[in-house]
Length: 303
Length: 268
Ligand SMILES: Nc1ncnc2c1ncn2[C@@H]1O[C@H](COP(=O)(O)OP(=O)(O)OP(=O)(O)O)[C@@H](O)[C@H]1O
Ligand SMILES: [Mg+2]
View 1 (cartoon, rainbow over the protein chains, first blue to last red):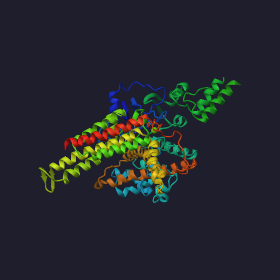
View 2 (spheres, rainbow over the protein chains, first blue to last red; view 1 turned 135 degrees about the vertical axis):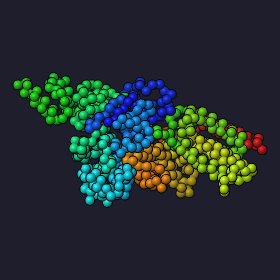
View 3 (cartoon, chains in turn cyan, orange; view 1 turned 30 degrees about the vertical axis):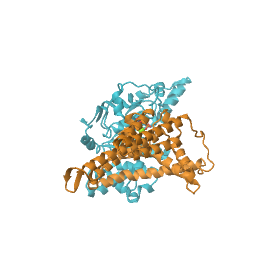
View 4 (cartoon, rainbow over the protein chains, first blue to last red; view 1 turned 180 degrees about the horizontal axis):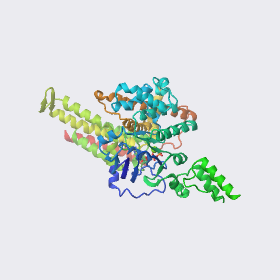
């Protein structure tokens, strides 16, 4: 369980200390580049076993927010608790890192070892896992991301394709067996096929292995179908937090902060404007299947 | 750690110093640096410092920005100070610890040289803080032009400098991200080779270098795509011109030189 209590963060704490309160936002939309506060008074609780989505316009503070979750950055004011422990302390933060795995945007850019094996083993070795278990740990991690252990173990990560590199980087975090996995735009820059496979992997991790997942994404379609709850940031403040159906209920409001609603819902909204109202299921219209069903229901209802 | 204002990053502004002709500014800064190098008494240094502070004031760059911009290079100052402290001998001996002797001369040189070096850094930093890389490159190219006659690749050299300056802040940012990522995987990043520091360092340096190569490839592809073919026949959208502002700059630098030399003689 990770709890944020009134967390504000500034990349320039000295200047922020002199400036007025963190609470007031002034830009119309988006953050100005020299905006003082990257996060303003953020409070929420992440439950164990949850699939938690994070959305928001570019520069809204998503990446900054998730870096608080394993103590990489400490709040300028407010507190982050992981399992009830305040992690502003350096030692507490480094203990938490074994449990909270963070996969950065473009994680393949952080590969460095001369072989895939050594790169994946980097995390477990840092945590002090015994060397005789290493082969098993790395094998399992690579299997989880659908890479053939024997084929890639000795290869240089730089010889692999971009998509494979990303899987290796993923495996490097999974090998630490985190209970909470944080993904910063995991599918960015992949082709549609790679994207589908990666999201399927994330789903598997959450569903079969019971990992708590936090996923940042610019794709509302993905978030709406995958996430239990979605946190929407706007200029560093929490703009909405709730089930996808609640968050995307007001398409106009979403648009005003630069957010799209998922495509099927958007389709239904346009139909409604043109005078064809579809029945709105309680769970929201977030998949093609539910859209088809709604259209079919409307059609049957007319006859 | 914030996206720091590192050495070489431009700080936008409209002050007279920002608007000076870059060629002249580069020359002026070089002259000022020579003047600082030649000031070898405390009064001369004090006058030079007054001028440097004055320049920063005119450029409207706050002291905090100025200090932050040279902070990463202060280790050179500290190193110089320590070397002088221990290796320059003469005058009264203040303390002795085995082979290490701290003497009056040593202390004097340590303080004096670090002050002078700090001033030099401030002056160099003023140039990059108030000049865009593009202008700086052009200035450098203009100054190296005469040597092109002897086969010196003036344009290419300036271009290389410009690109290097352009990517410094970028690499600082990337290094920061890579560091965060490896810390997340429990890396212990220290320079201490006995604590596994080396693997920690390679986990930073290898990604940084691969990213440098990646940038180099995209950059060269991008330049090719826009028909970059070197310096010959290239023209500027806004040709550089000298203005009254530049005369004022020249006068200021001349005043600095005279005052510093005068202050130096006054002490003798
Ligand atoms: N290292 C840094 N130093 C200073 N400011 C930063 C730094 N990183 C981010 N910021 C600023 O903090 C704010 C939030 O940035 P953040 O990277 O968290 O946004 P984001 O929501 O992840 O955006 P994106 O969708 O583009 O990844 C932005 O205004 C950004 O300019
Ligand atoms: Mg981001």
